[in-house]
Amino acid sequence: MHIIRRRGWEIAEHEVTPEAVVLGRRGLGRIGLGAALASTAAFGTRPAQAQILGLFGGGGTKPVPLAPLTAPRNPRYLPGRALTAEKAATTYNNFYEFGETKDIWQAAQRLKFAPWSIAVDGMVAKPFTIGFEDLVNKTKLEERVYRHRCVEAWAMTVPWTGFPLADLVRLAAPTSAAKYVVLHSLADAKQEPGLHNPMYPWPYIEGLTMAEAANELPFLAIGMYGRQVPPQDGAPIRLLTPWKYGFKSAKSIVRLTFTDKRPQTFWAQLVPSEYGFWANVNPAVPHPRWSQARERLLGTGEMVPTQIWNGYGEFVAHLYDGLKGHRLFA
Ligand SMILES: Nc1nc2c(c(=O)[nH]1)N[C@H]1C(S)=C(S)[C@@H](COP(=O)(O)O)O[C@H]1N2
Ligand SMILES: [Mo]
Image (tube, rainbow, N blue to C red):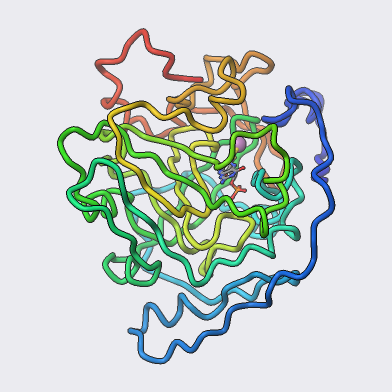
């Protein structure tokens, strides 16, 4: 449990309930042992970038050793806030595939994230599957420091290493009929105990419009704090959409599907009245059960005002010019 120091003006942790609370709490069943130990295939002949990437694959029960992974920081995206302490950011997670609480980081160590590949299908010139390292080697890695705002009113500021989602979209070559890109997270009940809970509409999927996906902000992260993304944060590759509530940022992505139909995303399917497709951050639009005016910073517990578009309006607000009247902020 994450314990916070409370001051009079802070909202209490119990006033903000986890995304799943309306479902009631259920046992997830015992976590089975016996996952294979880290895959240690020989990685002899790859270029330097990929060698760094393949070293550790997870799949065990001990904390996964994380290979260093650094890239030049892009100065275009300055957070205007101190970085969240790494320990705070990596031990307080939402990853329902591993359980409904915030302290799933140990359970997530069984995620086997190498080898890994991503399937690209739907409305594309030619469907294909690409290995994680081949994909990364087609991109130019950079570091971006992004603010992340969970719909539950906690926030963090993290240096991520990765590349724009737009690069992968270009590689996918969607047809002009495509209107949305759908991102699918790994759904493997052998590794992910949460999948035994049939109340959830597995797999975890999220989606963006093609205009959103082509924007410069959506970022596919493979590193965090100068190392591989750890399992609990969505190894080996996860999305970040920093102007949207955190649930849009799908973890451990295995598939991209291009479609002309708006996807029924995981949380929107579960609790449509609370979590919609757009989910853009707006302090003036409360969640049905709590205010979104302020947010609690992981690590320090400090409460700070929430910003419209989470402070990224200059990059994305124009995307919504023609969508007045839509439920853009929930
Ligand atoms: N596959 C998957 N992706 C997910 C989630 C999840 O439960 N499963 N939780 C989302 C939510 S609600 C948030 S706030 C962020 C949390 O990311 P973090 O644990 O790295 O802070 O991941 C998002 N991506
Ligand atoms: Mo979240």
